[in-house]
Length: 148
Ligand SMILES: [Cu+2]
Image (cartoon, rainbow, N blue to C red; front, side, top):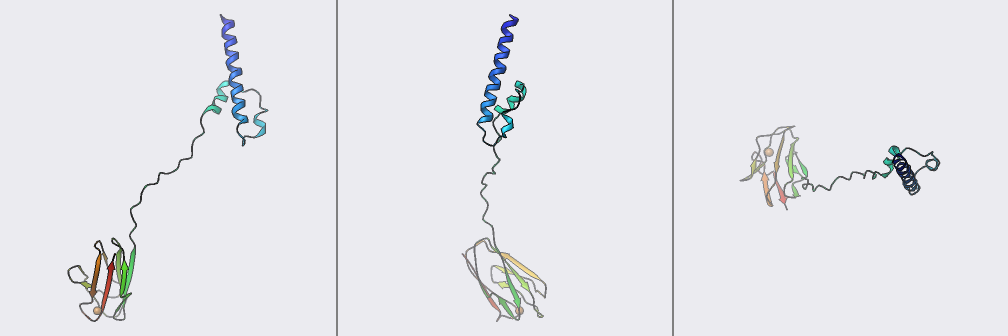
């Protein structure tokens, strides 16, 4: 009985090494010294049968469309650019840079407080359309935002 198990064990060891060699030969990147290595115990060669870990590729997660931020300069009694075309969801920041105070008013849509140099006012346009605005202190100052 003991003999039988011994033969079985030797057979398994030989089988294991045979497969291990095959696996190594099929690997073109394996160093040539690997083939010349002395017969390794079965426990060690078993790692050769493990599937190689696949590189983790991050799934393509759909990104929300990124909103663009536009800046309109308020200086020299004018808005620059006076006419701006943007997409729905974009944000416009009016950057006040003038010696005189101004406001940004679009009747029924938005209205800034009185701004002085260094102040900012922003509005996110979530509706398509044309938005005319002006300075309530100097009504000749006008601008337009076109939202597509
Ligand atoms: Cu003004």
